[in-house]
Amino acid sequence: MTEQQMIDAVFQWLVEESEIPQQEFLKTPYSKLVAYHNSLGRKIRNEFKLWENAWTPDIRNGVDHSPDHPDAVSMRVIEAVWQRAQQEDLVDPLEVERLKAKRKIK
Image 1 (cartoon, helix red, strand yellow):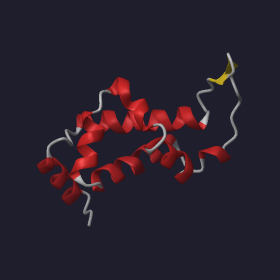
Image 2: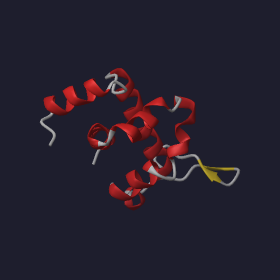
Image 3: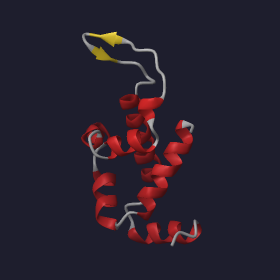
Image 4: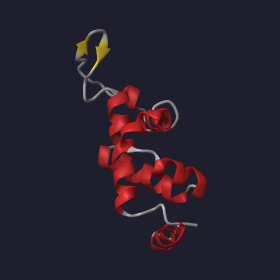
């Protein structure tokens, strides 16, 4: 699965999610999205089996900074979903309903 497909799938989940978690996510400042590393990030890493993908480690000071490390990939997905949601203005509940209807979500 490509990173864009993961972004699309997680965005779809966000659109389907109830208003409260949605607004909490969207109101989180971009610089604080790391707060989702152990929740949404773990779901992304597990759901998309990111730990099964091979990557070349880039170890610096005992930390893997590889852009292909599952933690890095899941963080990029979280950031991209947040940016897309901000652009589509999902904070407005009426907008959420419009998007759901547009995508024919049940």
